[in-house]
Length: 464
Image (cartoon, rainbow, N blue to C red; front, side, top):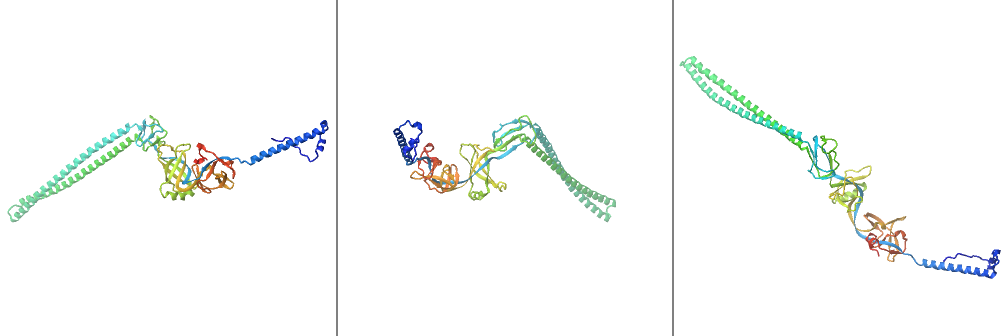
């Protein structure tokens, strides 16, 4: 109740009455005194009631409702966070090595294909004809090889015949020489005429000439053998050339069927069935990207390179990738590549992690959140991140004391892992800290702990 009229005066009431305008003169002096006394009593009663109400509110402190969590001690990972880009493990641009009409396409755009799957078929009739021609040339040259080998055999027989003739004629020449010498002896004794001796001498000379001719025939026959053997080698070389031509024709024919060189996912088809394909054209027929496994490329500042070398020396480092708006669990991989040099413009070094990607949640070109786990730190005090506040004196949390009053506690903050923040200094395990409602708190305020979402305090601690 509030007093609507307040009378303040240091003059006698008679003076106050005298100051009332003349048109109040009809009111008697006694009645005026009663009116003034009534108003004074009413104001005094109002003041007493207000004072009593204010005293009751001042004596009663209002409790501030808050949600609390317990500071816990646990082993936490030492991590580096970055933004990465997904890259295909390998990418192949499929082109045709022969020209012709595209007669068959055996996949759908965007389809997953396996290594060795048939992708395209090109008209191969001209290539088949070239193969047949090469086979015919080989058959012809094989016949020439056989003919040359027969000539070698014939030439060798002629050599043997010439050698036999030489042996026969040598024997005859020897016999003729013996006869000539004997008749020359008889001529000296006068037993025969000179004409008879000259006849035997001529026969001996003729036999020696025959032997010389036979020996020349042996040399000629031997040369014929060498020539025939050379013909055999030439014929065999021609056959080898034919075999090379056949192999090339088979290779060209194999190019008419195009198979997938890797296991991956196909891109957009550039030419449809029925179009003419140009050999080794600039644009590929299809691009295949291998996405199982797959790379995620990201960078870290160069100041973190010593830590990276230190912890990677103990083995492979774990890497987690989280696609934006993906409600699934983080995808696990491992660090497989550290670039050989720094990027001088950004002061960072590029890293690559490999993921099996069996569920194909990672797609080339996608941006992902990357977490590189270096090591683990034991016995670290953690609190929900929303409990940490920033003020003019630094970061702090509100601690709920046993008497249900709030204490503002300065803290030294470490890394943030997920929804939790590590506290290096300022808290002890088991202390209750405020996670919701701290904006209504002042040091020393009385708090009323209320349940959080699901009947528990923030950060998983039970509300009291």
